[in-house]
Amino acid sequence: MDIFIDPKLCIGCGSCVIMAESVFTLDKKTGKAKLIKLPKEITKELKTAIESCPIDAIKIIE
Image (cartoon, rainbow, N blue to C red; front, side, top):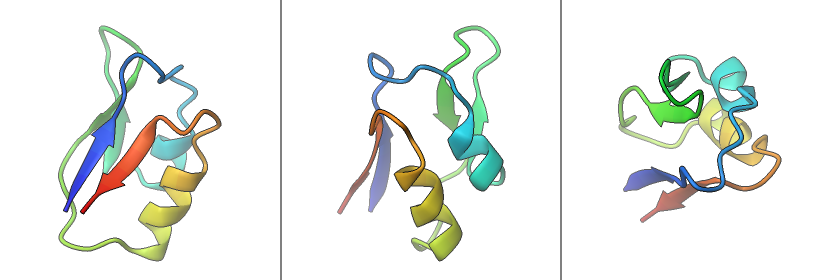
């Protein structure tokens, strides 16, 4: 499993960070979302964070 954040789509709204701050952060240089660490499993919190992206820039790759 992997998590992909499309940097071309991300608008840096921060909803993923608010919902799963242990997994996502906003890059200080670009202002876009980036992965802090790859979680061992997809939790309800993580799924909600991914679904909260208003432009679907975050994908789970199995």
